[in-house]
Amino acid sequence: MIANADSKPDAGPAPDATARRCADCGTPAPDAYCPACGQSTRERLPTFAQFMREATGRYVALDGRLWKTLGALLFRPGFLTREYLAGRRRRYIGPARLFLVSSLVLFAVLRFVSDSFDIDSAVQFDSPKAPKTRIDSGELLTLDDDLNVEFSDFPGAGGLLKKPIARFNNLPRAQKVEQILAGTLRYGPSAMFVLLPAFAALLKLLYAGRRRRYPARPRLYGEHLVFAAHNHAFLFAAGTLLCVVPGGLARGAIALWAVAYLAWSARAIYGGSWLGIAARASVLLITYSILFSLVTVGLLIVAILLR
Image (tube, rainbow, N blue to C red):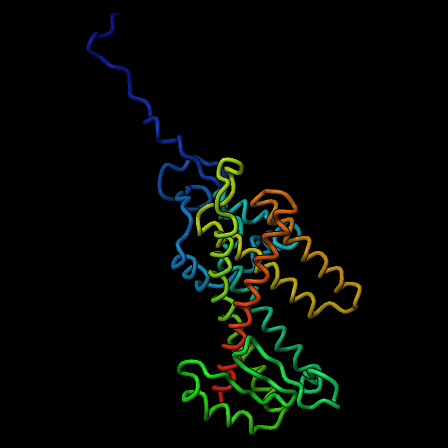
């Protein structure tokens, strides 16, 4: 029997139908979501607005992802950032949510720890024989050992803060400490969210250039934002451990690991020599310390206005 010359073989699947695979599990995923694990097949980095929406969504569930994420966060520097940038995101908690939850946990632990010892006697700038020791924070404010606050004249501050500052300075020292602590613990996580995008912007500036030598180095702001979120989350977790782990030796080991972790993480994501990492880290630390001081002043202002 001779086949009809006009007949055509059955058309096979479109060549692109199975070409795209899920970066997380490897399953063919021609549509917008992986049919096996449900991860979005769009591998674009989030904008800052999307990053914030992810952070303020539902909190972390106590499932397998939590323990897998925590293990990688604490003991594998740079791993979560590499996985996220490679598109393997479904199996781990997202960086924005990880940042938010770890910061909330840290400040909750700080609130609990602050109730276990006398903060008033601990906050001393000098010996009791020097009751008028003064601390100058960037010439924006002056704080003496009695926690009396004086702000320098800068636009809009004089008239707005004059009465609240006077009311705050008339409080007993113990009440001042309590009010400052309450404001810091309440608004501290929000302050860290203000610092996060600034930290990512500094990374983008410090690692600009040398595209040919380091082609895999993050270039986009979103990539730096993911790295910044993961490393801040690690620092929050390390800070929580420092608050709850007894013994100076254990705390010293955590502090040393934190320093090594940050350097190792930068090397894993950005590459380069250890000398280059140290140089950039120095610039980053100085600049970030200035920004942190400004945010601290802002927290102090908020604490004064709480009453």
